[in-house]
Amino acid sequence: MSTSVSIGAAPEALALLPDEQLRQRAWAARRALGDRAVILGHHYQKDEVMEFADITGDSFLLAQRGAAATQAELIVFLGVYFMAESAYVLASPAQQVVLPDLGAGCHLAECADIFTVRDAWDQLVRAVPGKRIIPLTYMNSGADLKAFVGEHGGAVCTSGNAERAFRWALAEGDAILFFPDEHLGRNTGVRIGLADDAGVVWDPRRATLGGVDPDRLAETPLVLWKGFCNVHTTFTTTQIAQVRAEAPETVVIVHPECPRPVVAAADEDGSTEYIIRRCDELPSGSHIVIGTDWNLVNRLATQHPDKHIRCLNEFICPCVTMNRITLPKLTWCLEALAEGEVVNTVTVDDGMARWARVALDRMLAIR
Image (cartoon, rainbow, N blue to C red; front, side, top):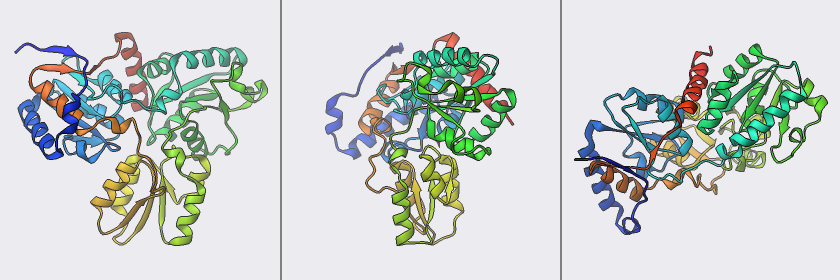
């Protein structure tokens, strides 16, 4: 059977079918694909598609595991676009990366783009001559930004290893330019011993020096990009105070993408993997309130019926772009792949991929 590559979308008629019929069709296609495909599922995805994931995890772990599944010529990513890009960067030339909906983006990743970052970098190096600035980008960023930091002596970091990356960067240079998440950057700065107000915030919408005073730029060790996750910034200290008033024994755990006051008010903060591990470790009967994506919190509550687990904001809207990967779209995608039509492939320019790989490898080398 010949193989073709195309960009497509699930037929609207699929969305009208009963879930059970879609499940049966998706499983039939999955079985037909066999070892030719590996399906990677990010923790924030819906249960209706996570059922089909061969491997679950955070974005970088999934990219690594997809590349390691060398028997698979198809890597199907249940996540968002920047995750699929990272999978492509790490994959072998024999592997193709597929995203069931190419519109699945990330608000946080889109807070910084290569044009505004280049402009900020040019302004920075002119404003503070002789000061060595190390650029760091969060995993939640496009491949072009990963390539930028790779080419300029910097690295990528995840929420789990940001502290190590920050310490490395300050050992390598005089200051850090961190994008695109202001809050993860500030929380990480505090973790390595900087004061809450040690960093300055670079607003890309301000034409001159991001709205930062030149003297502050000269003295600061940390330049934070004005970007944020539109899920994690819905959590507040008021919500935590209400939890404490209702049940003082509750353990409040939040993701470090939350604003600094929320992280400071919580009992614990950590990456998605950290949150999952703590839910495993805390004893039966524990009351746990979590400040992160609702899909994950709901799944953890189901997995731990002996514990009382709920979301810090029970009226939160799950990440809209993450939720673009639906059962009808996955069914369409798997059926197309099983029939030999490779749809919705994600690729990265060779030069960009090379420098992005440098930045990712540099992150892995940091101890």
